[in-house]
Image (tube, rainbow, N blue to C red; front, side, top):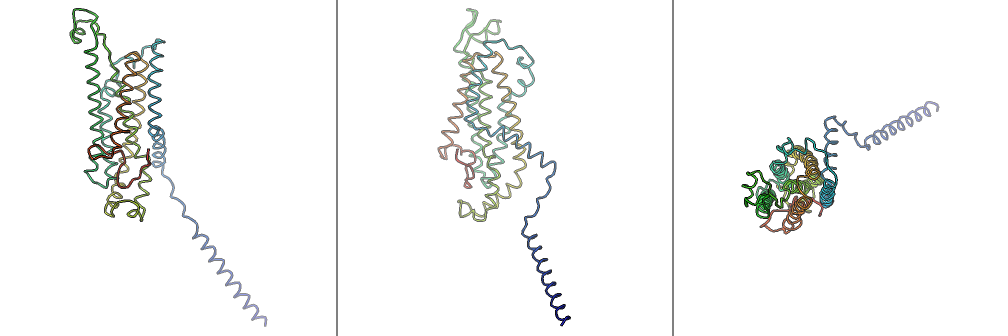
Amino acid sequence: MASKSGSSRRKSFTKGSHKDYEDRNVSRAGKKPLPEPTHLGHFVLMVVLKVCRSVLFVDTSVKIGIYLIGVMAGSVICDLFVVPKSYLSDKQNFLNQYFVKLGWGWTLTLLVSYVCLSSLVYCSGNWAAVRRHIMRMAIASVEWYVCVTAFRHIETTVGMCTSSQHLDRNTCIDSGSGWLGFDISGHVFLLIHNLLTISEEVKTFKEWRKLGELLEDEDLPNKRKVTNDDIKQAQSLYKGLTPYIKATFIVLALLTVLWEFMLLVSVVYRFHTLTQKVTAAFVAVFCWFLNYRVLYRLNSEWFPAYPGESSFNFLKSS
């Protein structure tokens, strides 16, 4: 009898131990795997992108308000108080000569790169659709050229020489006299034009992670008017081009900080009068409004597409 009871206890103990062992395995298997450790380079990139996002993702309407108020307030301050001369007050300084005077060239180069790379992804490599997005940069270039040329024409025709002997601006200046004309600030226009264009174009990166998640959705063909081939092409381009898009995004953030700093310099130092600077600022805002609030929202084949417009429809309406 004792051997039988001992045998039954051993069987019960063995079964219980086996059950406990299985329960522990099940509980371990149910836990999510621990994430891989973050490498230092990846952590630094995350921090840099976070800072860049805080610079570039300020609402464009808020930026417009800040720029307009800043131009008016800064102009009043420099008219009331004498701002001490410095290296930056000299028009021949390095930043003015090699960055501001070539400002649209720097901005255009980076924005064309960014728009081309990003639109290749969300347009699934369709170059006809990509060209519609790049055309926004062509329109912005035409506006820059037309406005700057018009500013020069206005200064030349609406003005007079301090010496009555000269009626032409160039002759007047060559003779050592001064030309009194309405010189609309080309620097203020250019810098605000650059800043607002960058602000609108980088909005696609705000939802870039969402686009990546959307491309992994197995039910995507039923949710969007896209084919499986389009999805596969976009997935491949997303994986291959995202590092370059991030790099361009970071450089655009740095350029934005530089343009805002140079805008402050142009406003504070007495290069132009208050009315000349304010006029330039309003012209730049008008160009932004015409483009991004009117023309690009018409959804017409005769005009460029709005940033991020594609069959994937991954952007929030703004």
